[in-house]
Figure: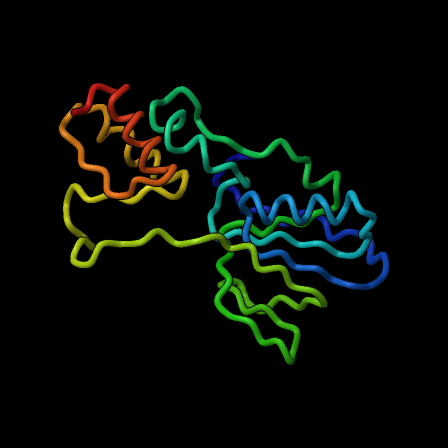
Length: 178
């Protein structure tokens, strides 16, 4: 499947008639959906991701994807075989718990059980929105936009000394950036 394709897998047999919706197609969301199937859950299971890409692992973004040694890091999971319906490019907008509805960019999604595994948003420095040369690294698209930045071999300042910042600094040095 193309990474840019939205996918709605087949809805599995109702099993016990319950519907589990997992919001977030990163590591936590994928592992939750897979574990539900492995532990015998047979009801409808939907995994919703805001990005249009096949669910992927984020750690390779800060090195292998940036340096061009990997094109992506999609999880090796056969969602269709597991009866997990993927709704990619679908943003969760809100929850109506009393009605058991998840509001999304594609309309409401009913659920019996809802798992929120949306991860975190990067901290944006005040005053940097729209400033040329200021970049964030969280998604596959971010990593692809940063490849040409590293290719220019300019001086780079990394703000954030956590795992992603350290990995990005290492990748920048490997690419020849100061």
